[in-house]
Image (cartoon, rainbow, N blue to C red; front, side, top):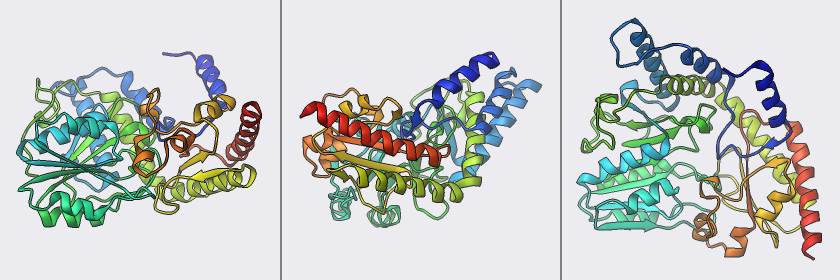
Length: 390
């Protein structure tokens, strides 16, 4: 266990950087840390029948209730996984067994795009988006028409631009066509309301660390009665009703449950506060820096995401010039790639535009003082980089 002075030292180091990369991962909520600390100090396998095993199982089931409550699902519709990537793969792997066609959008996360490309189906359709990043619904209708059984997988909110998907419109299209619908809700859960009792979605993926839980734990929502084949990725001891074998990560699961409860309790207050801070950040940068363009729909997006292109400045150069601000050049999950953002290219942006884009993402611990400082640091960094390039 880390000493108190070690933890304080890490906190001081972290406090020196303004963290604006919540779409990559959110800081651990205090509620999650408290729940995990207790679980980590207890011994018990949730599959064991003795007292300590029952304690672990009861805590895990309590967390299952909290996660279900956050998204409007029944506890027995929640399957714990190692994260949204596993949940996405599990959902597509099972849903595609009986499908003749798989349909995804061009702006999906690689955890969906690459999983879809690896499926043993002959017909993979990739549908486009408009310049604001909104899904082209007419292309979706064409893609599912006459397929004799399709699986559609779309994200609820884009990880790079924050642009939202009109899930109500999509469910109407998929139901008319008799298609299964999987939604990657990794970026939306815990930031905007989600009630699966009101949406005709078959499968949905989420990850704890995006809303203040620990990394390495997530969940798949599998609607009761959903006509998917029983096709687990991991076989073994039969945990999670056979869908995900392996000793349950009790500490991670209870941390996820505590974060889900905190996110649900504070959802509306955080939404308004974070949106106000995001709008102030954008207004401040646009007022002090020339040649800045916002990516994505200005209104139909997550409250804490701002994707900005700085004309003539490579994103990596700008980020290097402001080490006091932790932001991302597009999607952190694709960092290091030699190709520009596939999301921005799909939105008909040029390669140069994509390579000059920085994503700022805010969340539950972001403060007004941090935003004021970030505006100044961004403006100063832009001026220094442009001077050096001139």
